Length: 271
Image 1 (cartoon, rainbow, N blue to C red):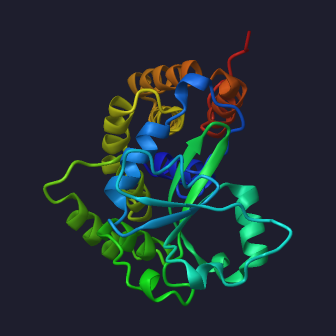
Image 2 (cartoon, rainbow, N blue to C red):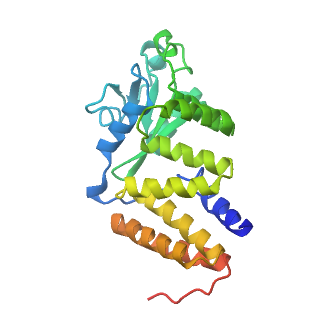
Image 3 (tube, rainbow, N blue to C red):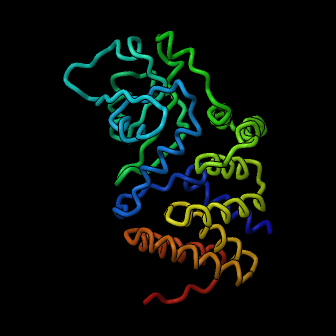
């Protein structure tokens, strides 16, 4: 079992907290805008004001307020965050780099969620307490957001306590599930992690990343423990991930070869 734990740690650390694999092509039918809107509604507070180029697309049919803004213009508004009660940003990697150039304080913001919008990974950053807008500073973080604050300092017990509060009598969301997975990794609770990923793969059968991570975990543990049933389940989940996003099939195949070599397995020839 020690070998399996090491493989899982190596595998998931490579994805930065277990859920940060970057992808460059997503099939049109898998744009999860509706899921992202629903998810944000459940993890942010009612007074949240989301700014950035993705603000409008992430505030459709939910109670959150958008503030459409494009960073990197010719004239930077140095008073933007002081004049407007912005509590969160919705930016992709290039937008974030431009925002940090104009507003260096954003570099210390906490990433509270990530979503894929078309071909871009969009980050939701908590910025309510980084500037001098009185109304923004009155924003009350949700238990989920407080858990994300604790995760920055690897305080897994306190993060779990906040998640427990968040889940009390309420439906679990995709972001909460990902947060729980990161907590289980930090606490080395791999049995719980595997059960959670199995549940999430069933709940979100069109989410490429969830299928990929679940498939990787089953394959890693199956190879490490000579458990063919787990390997078969891992292969099934990886096949499902390829069907969701065929552009990533090469990556999945390369990963499968690498993990077999690490586990000391014979590497089959590929067609």
